[in-house]
Length: 183
Picture (tube, rainbow, N blue to C red):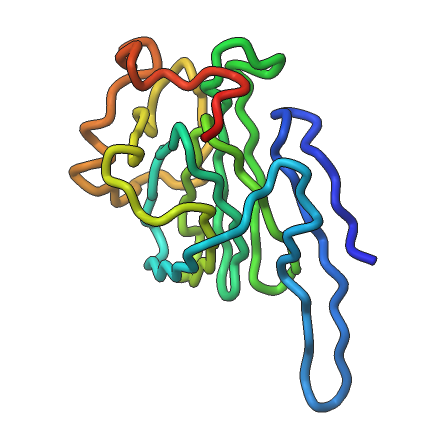
């Protein structure tokens, strides 16, 4: 049985350590099962992100979309920050490493900002529970002192889009996540 537990830092974030089976032929890991997540909906789109060591992606968030992340190769320093007004964990920041050599998945609910630093070259496989919607592709500053993220990098490579995200205190009211918001 996989070990599935809610984060002690941010509510509704689920950390999965699936069962791995292997022998001289190789390995098998069941990486995702919908029934593992009480807040999960049917995942509708799968994506693959390949990044070079030193890159930072994020912090991104969605009002309506949940993500499930699983690193296939390399090491990602994952930073999550609860933006959901009214959440018991509003304002909490969680940092953890996902590594292709250690089987671990991460369910990220809507309203929780998420990003990762490529500590090595990496391949991240992830599922989302809705199709890409540019109106639900939002962001908050990766280097916001109020979030206090420890990315583990001294000279990160950050996209123009991610460099232009607002501070948490400057997120417009119309796109500020609230606890319980889900469509």
